[in-house]
Image (cartoon, rainbow, N blue to C red; front, side, top):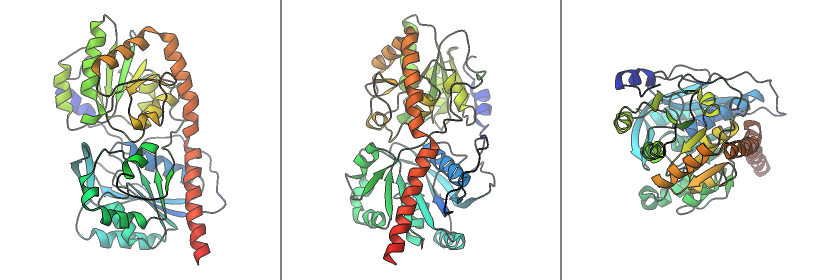
Amino acid sequence: MPLLTPPSATAALKRRPALPNLPALPDAHDERSLRIALVTEYYYPHLGGVCEHVHFFAREARRRGHHVDIITSNIPGAEPQPHVIRLGRSQPVYANGSQARVTIGLRLRKQMRKVLHRGHYDIVHVHSPLTPILPMLAIEESDAPVVGTFHTYFDRSKGYSFFNDFFQRRLDMLSAAICVSHSTTVALERYFSAPWQIIPNGIDTEVFHPSVAAPPAIRKDEPSILFLGRFDPRNGLSTLIDSFRKVKGKRRRAQLVVVGDGPLREHYYKQARGDDDITFVGAVLEARPSYYAHSSIYACPTTKASFGITLLESMACATPIVCSDILGFRDVVVHDREALMTPCGDRDALAESLVQLLDDEGLRIQLGTAGRHESMQYSWPRVTSRVLDVYHSVLGQGAARR
């Protein structure tokens, strides 16, 4: 399939499912049912790791008999959904080298207070607790214990430096502070002190697995290299396109399949310059497993990440990985075990690793098999049990104090 021209590409990119269509799972009720509020700036139709985490945790907790509401903001394209409460309006902003979102609107604090009061929640769980607006409002307005999960790795933060006391006080209001990876604690400890607990992101190993149907965008007559992620400078698509040209320059037959969307789409179209071996698919949600499972290699040249959730998705589909050697990815993969890791931003090294895997089917099978086995440690039932253990510990401490 050739490179999409901008008009057809734009049409493809508009097809954004609001929620993934997932198979039903049998109920498995826990001994005690909780009322849980998950507060996040990021939820569908926004695509990204935080909304994935929130959605899959909520799904597993509900399967166990817990009541879970998701409190988030209104975003263009969002449709009404049961147990999703939307406040204000989501506004994209540029922060931390990426596009972030904040909620704007009148009387947001009053609305948050009312929603939390009406919900009679046992636990309020805020995601990215020290980012405006909704997470911090929930921390300040909740009468129930508040648990926070931190998702982001960052090098430096002027805001955290200048307003350190303000943010530390909000952090101190949490009953428990969870980080998704060691790299996240490294970033936070530059500015704050807390008894961090590490609970990783999860993966639905029943959805992400090797035995799924192939997508039409991947040609079967030659190996395929997959990029899957937001069109965001730190995700390294420019680096990958340049490296892919080096791969082809070494007389290797291959195709680059690009799955994703973002404000920089026109920039990447121009960089690809009509290359028939580069296919822009657009944003996908439900079909992600099929792209991983039927790609020869998943390439992830990201320059900054707190946790490699897309690495886990690829591993669960038994697809070998070539990725950047960064702190957040070292929490998930080991060089030569599930992935080949290359110096961040090194186009030549990335091209060499891609060629190495394209030329060595045995190594691809070895890395993919190891990845599938390792991914089972991150299944959502396991991760959800660990988070629920934190909830019960917090509630037990509160009962003891009373």
